[in-house]
Length: 212
Ligand SMILES: N[C@@H](CCC(=O)N[C@@H](CS)C(=O)NCC(=O)O)C(=O)O
Image (cartoon, rainbow, N blue to C red; front, top):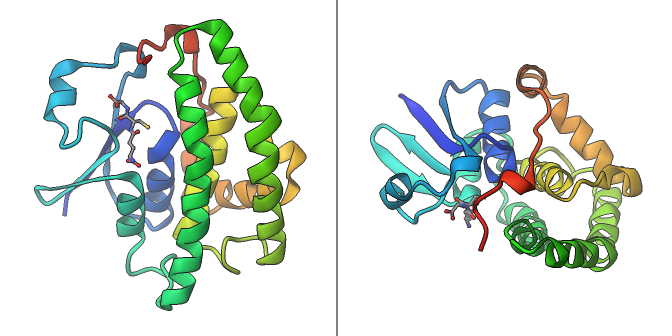
């Protein structure tokens, strides 16, 4: 059953999917496009909705990172069978994506002064608002989104890592429960070896052409 995940040579929305595929020992082709030469009009036009990540399996194509993340975790205990548990996990996942929606326009801002202004706003406003709540949520729920490791924790970890990289910050420093969960995931079997093999991600926003 050949599996293929296409994204940029970055962590971003694909890293939780890669982590789960490694953690659950699923073989896949990890296709990475150079983010600095994006957009490539021909490749973009070939994508169902013009965006990555795209997951392919047996000739079928899936888009949307959260749908893919949940799909690759199916049949494992990363996806609870209880509907309430799933909805509870999803509710935090959607909140972390609400936070992430503030980061994306910042990264795509072409004017350096405006970028600094947007970045400062995230650091001074959005992060304290969301992360005080996320940190408390984790403290109240055994260190996870819902009491034990689930697909949602991988999404959560992915957004923290991408956010740290794009904004040049370290969220774990101010939010210890968040940091503990990120470290837990990075040390999982399969994930640990993968993280070591690829090394840390970096981004040079000055070379990033994909601006609005
Ligand atoms: N809601 C989509 C968002 C996908 C998305 O924003 N993809 C970005 C990378 S993180 C992308 O492909 N950007 C390049 C483009 O739009 O041309 C998901 O979760 O998969």
